Length: 150
Image (cartoon, rainbow, N blue to C red; front, side):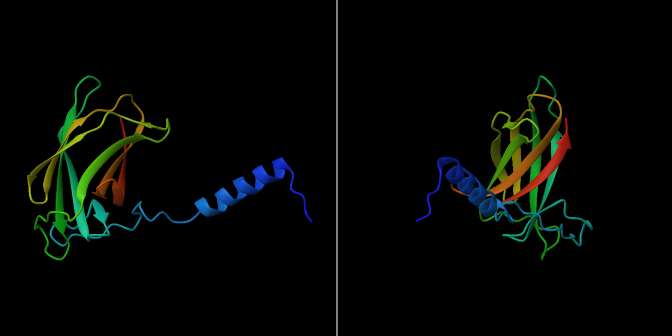
């Protein structure tokens, strides 16, 4: 009979966690951008719904004021046509280097395929990720990340 010491158990558990945590994420969409025939580009691509997302600042946030952005979803099969995503759009502001986010944003549906993201605020300068997500309830179905420097 093999006797495993407590430290060996800890090592085996950590080693197991390392192996199962490796590999491609099924949530983060790292597929290459596809080209929109109308504009020649696809800024951010959601492969689960074959949608192109364009994010444009409506009002840039400052160190003291909230900002807002307009998100538009287009179908690559019908260039220039706004399409309402099947899943719910959501945005998370995340500072990877510090391991925290910012205050939550709110999403306003303006018309099918067009949304306003309000209450955008970066709590400190530095590198940030804007995580654009499509959610089914609390489940993130797809996510694309835009890196910015504030």
